[in-house]
Length: 573
Image 1 (spheres, rainbow, N blue to C red):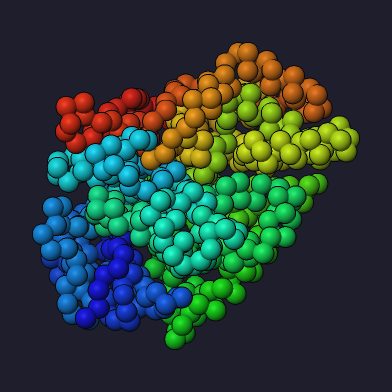
Image 2 (cartoon, helix red, strand yellow):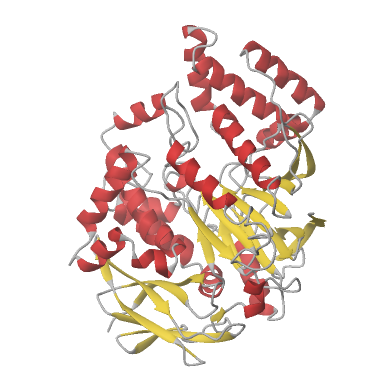
């Protein structure tokens, strides 16, 4: 009898009709995977194979708009989910009401987001040295309190797995399989070892139930492959010279496509995706997927990992800030020109409807809120921003060959590879935000959702010196980690980065690098917060409400709980 190895993950609920969804599973052998809902909706799919593993993305149809239904997963007709004696409520699929797509102001959209989840369980199960996991705590809260507000979508902004920082259990398994003394040592080496990371992360009971009942959007960041992935041309040249890198990057992209990327796509996108069709039609899709991953690594234009999701009148653009980079020293870009054009097209669609008509998405503008998902923050602490701009300048040779060598060493040692380290891309993103915010039918709010930096903060741009002043309320919302830690020295560094002294010293760096002063300035309006945390945006009409929750241990020994550190709102024009 076929068994359920991983999942189910409720990946997408259709907000246009409210009648269909997709559910992802991994099974332990070929079979027919089926979802049966209590209200009669359902669907099935035949598994497909990659590297000896069997997967299915099950289309669920016939759902009732504005409803919620429990569901079961069956393999070859035998029920495998819910698990026997599960302590969690039934997994359910909740669909938006028709009013959500029609634009009624009293229908909110709840978007929870964060990044950086190191999933390894503590060696002592009674104490986690890096504190309670925010996703575990959210799951336990929802399970204990059925009436608690449930996210409509969980946006995971990178580092869903850590290929370069493995747990003791993963290292033990690697040691039983190959020589840890040979590169890449304790890091994962191939597709099979990548699957172990997903088992460790997604078989966590709380997270498994959470992902089975809350739809999710995902994008990779560096640790999904390796720390500082695609930092620079020199970094990439060094990695490609190693004997193990090619297998690592190909396996990383293959596993990301299977476990994360496929579920980001709508049923319509899946139906026209030639790679998905080829993998499903093959007796074994491994070589088809390997060839794709090799091309995707070699050429940033070959595929597009970025994607768009609309939740009623909320638009989410998830932007690939790793695989789409151009790394030539004199043509560096965070996202290549073709990718940036796609992002711009998606952001502007619906912001300038024909005069006297309504957008096809509903009354008024095409959408009320724009969320730009970027694993890396757009607006950094001022000192860090100026140092990264200085570094980009000296690496490009503005201060001579000696400084270029020093700059490259510092770039790789200091993780100087955010938007500020790609100055033209920073200006392009800033210009796009300003253009969308000043469009005839501008959204009420524009929020750049980010993680990566292992703390949380809010930054608000000042457009006084930028040509054109957007009417939209614009925020940089940074939230990480979900479950990880940060050294005390780095905490102090980020605090210093926001200080007046840090800003002044950053300007000295910029002057040395012969960097022009940015036309955009910004200020921190919240944080920094350090801990395991999640942010949640509640978007209703033209108003955005933001809550930031930290996972805290109960001193009396009870379950961990989410504690609000911030609850604020703003309204756009």
